[in-house]
Amino acid sequence: MAIASMTGFAREAGTTGAAAWALEAKSVNGRGLDVRPRTPPGFDAIGEEARRVLSQALTRGQVQLSLTLQRAAGAAKVRVNREVLQGLLDALADVRVPDGIAPASLDGLLAVRGVIELDEDEAAPSPEALETDLRAALPRLAEALAAARREEGAALEAVIEGHLATIADLVAQAEAHPGRSTEAIRARLSSQVAALVEAHVGLDAARLHQEAALIATRADIREELDRLAAHVAQARSLLAEGGAVGRRLDFLAQEFGREANTLCAKANDVELSRIGLALKHVVDQLREQVQNVE
Image 1 (cartoon, one colour):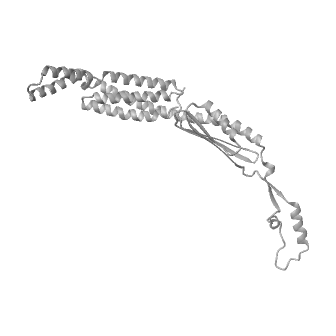
Image 2 (cartoon, helix red, strand yellow):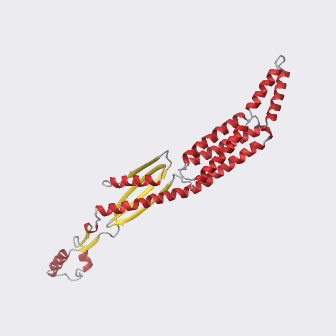
Image 3 (cartoon, one colour):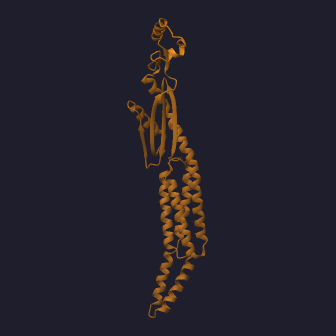
């Protein structure tokens, strides 16, 4: 099962008698599932049915649903008012047309108001037929929206996997860097302590070396690197699991951020600090993306 995005759009349209209708659903990020139908007066039941159907198809996201209605093109029937037309013909039969003036033509008579009528009521759909068609369209709309979110989720998964690959590479760089070893940290602190003792006579060198050893132990980033590697593995496992894993990915992204912050705080080396800052940057990008996952 693949992951799905919370962003998507779907549309279902049709005609019932003289009524042309369109159902549109647009979804964006949301902490939970929030379906907000917007329907014309008299169609509240369709809005509630849409809420129920979409709630079965989705688990998270804010969904805006709208229903629009208008008269279908060509739905009204054209009718000739024969009584009015015959009255015009009878009236013209007794009229002497002056010289130079053409007699009345059929198209001219048809242009007279009242001769041509649009019979709109005859094609109007029954409310029951319109509601039946709208209810039948709702499951198709829900599936189309879910499919659009899955398609967006496939692209989103590729982006997230790219961020995870970058994090794994930065962890490997920090792992291989000689400056992260306890020995390197102690050597660097020892030289600093020696310089301090030489510059300030009377300082307790033994106590200073003891404190330096404690600082060196706290500066070890072994645990942070292990946890970052474990988080990468867990995030990839969630992507492989698929489904509604957005909340767990978001929590994991927060854990990534904590480890990156701790690594930066512990780093006593310029290059390790650079790696830590790069980690923080890519973790921020990761968190932005996982907040779109359902």
